[in-house]
Image (cartoon, rainbow, N blue to C red; front, side):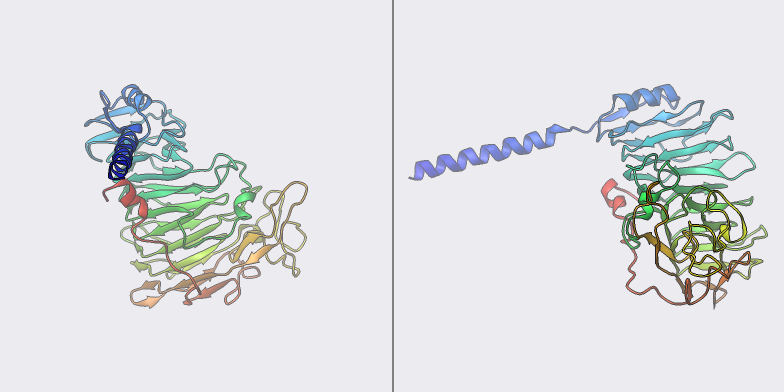
Length: 409
């Protein structure tokens, strides 16, 4: 009996050791050193990498004339030697991004990017689980361009989910959009999900502007959380329906410091569609708006796309009265009651007001201001609430869990 038990235990122990050995060696991680910062050398290193590998980019600077491609499903780390030491610049003729992360779920860190094309982008990404951190983005032209463009390229992608953290942006913004059909009906048919990880997160970054522009923007069903950032001479925005498209789905903006330093500034917040929360932000300096949280709805005052004006005659809107209220995707509206299709369009939308609280300027609370005569659609204590906490709202975990997952702030 003892011998049989010993044999069973011994065999079981061996199996455990073999299993653990196979598990550890099934997807070995390697460091792959690119020969230089030139695009051809970095692309060769990426092509030779497997999921889990780290592609090391040495010190140096190069001008790239096309896009570095990280294949979907190849989850790697692209690690530079520092945001001042490894610097990649765009050529003035490059029409697209310097790096396309695709849906790889990869990480890009410790690099600097100089962008010189007003149609260009630093990094384009979709999918989930990805991270861009400890990078610097500089704009070499007199126009606000995109440092990180977070986009869904198909209805299967949904709204991109990932993290941008501890980066520096100079005259460059971050933008998030939904699926490539632009209508983003699938995203608008999903539950709201604020307070979860189902959004683009931008946290612990610094934005410095010397020209007019926004630091954060969204449309086509985009969702974002913008928190604990420092913004100098710029503002935060979310777009509404502007044609044959759907508006920003949701936004959560909190814990930021937004400074007017040298430039004349209008408003620190400009929210035009969807719903969400804005709280615990500190605003400093002079703002011509007061400052205030500006809200409006483009179709209240402009005839745009198939929806036209929101004036009580468009099937896009709720048309509860002669104003057309509620306008499609306006401030304070949320989930579609069914999936909008060509055969079954124009779903009614859930009522879900916007809440803002504890946003201060020089010790005083900031209020919402309805812009462009949009008061027929956006009204206090109906579509938004001033200095009222949103019931049952809890912010998502901070710092974002992807920081611990990928390692190092």
